[in-house]
Structure formats: structure tokens, C-alpha cells
Image (cartoon, rainbow, N blue to C red):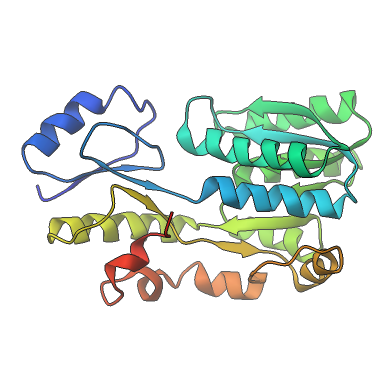
Length: 259
């Protein structure tokens, strides 16, 4: 084969087979998890910076005070851990009066996110917001909060279409568009370029977009937070515009953000 793509759960277990493949001259791409196997390529995201901005947007929206919680994926996963670190460190550094009352690993399971949100809402009646390292977790949390008659703010990651109503009504302060179709296309584009002999860095960071409503962006700007963003109408376009963004007609440098 000309290239191998792996979506690894255990970043250590796949190292021997990756080394065997790369020794045979086959480029290997580990997707969404940083695997240090020597010569493999890792397709990652600018997670720390993105979740820092999500935390900032939530912090500003709360006026710098209140109780928040965070739903994460699983410990030891590079993406989940990096997003968690960006969120937590930014709140602690820039918003000392915001208290993080809970951080719950969910294994990306919406049912576990539902249980965590229900526990938090019962234990912490003054909870104001929930951050999520993946949109499906925020959607589960909002389902619980709505059923309990509680209004929360959210900040998430993925750019799932289901989040657009929450963004438009101001409940979701900020989302990050990676996009399921974009992620799939990007990984194949990276593999195809490597198979064709193009030179790429071993760690690639996907270009992403901040998504919020125009009204929320205006409020955040008034509070001193400005950033480049797209609204949900533009997001619906960009989520499917991957051929123009990442296709064979764009240069190799378009495959990754500079880090």
C-alpha cells in the first residue's frame, strides 16, 4: 500500500506495527492522537489555543465569576488532554473568580455526559456553564439542563450541525469547527500527498474556525474580547467546503497551521 491511516485508541500499542510499516517505506498517519513511533505523521488540531479561546469566551460571558464544569474524553488521549489543559489553565490564569467544580472523563459517551451533568446540576445549583471537548457531550448536557429547567451556557468543539440552534440563541457561546467531513477529507488529503512523495511536517495541525453568533461576538467585543469568527450560516458552508480548503489545488502548506 502507499499509505496507512490509523485512528488509535491506545497510542502505545500501535507503535511496533507503525515502526514495521515505516521501515518498509510506507508513510503512516495517526489520526487525532499523537503517537511517537519515530517516523509516523500525526494529524492533530490547534487544541490548546482553541480551547483557551473557548474558555475566554465563557469567562467573559459569565462576567468573570461563577461555577463551571468540564466534560472531557478519556485520560491519556492527546486531543482530550490538550483541550482540557487549554481550558483549565486559561480559566485559572485569566479568571481567578471562576471556580471549576468538576471535570468528568466520559470516554466520548453521551450517556456518561448526561449522568455527569445531572449530578453537577443537583450538587451545584449555582452552576452557570459547562465546557465540552466534543459537541456531543454539550448536547447531552443541555438535554439534561433543559429538562430540569436550568439555563446554562456552553463552549464546545467539533462544529456539529446540531449545535447551531444553541449558538444562534446564545446558549452556546463558542464552538470550534473541525467538522466530521472536513476531518475525514483532510486525513485522506494528507495520506494522498504523502503517497505522492510530497514533504509534510510530522505533526500537522488542522486549520479550524471559531463559530459564534453575530450577537454573541458583539457582546464579547464590548467586553474586550475580539477574534476572527464565522456565524452558523457561514459554518454550514465551510463545513462542506473542504475540497476548496484542503484539496489538491492548494499548496502543501495549507495542510497544517504553523506551530
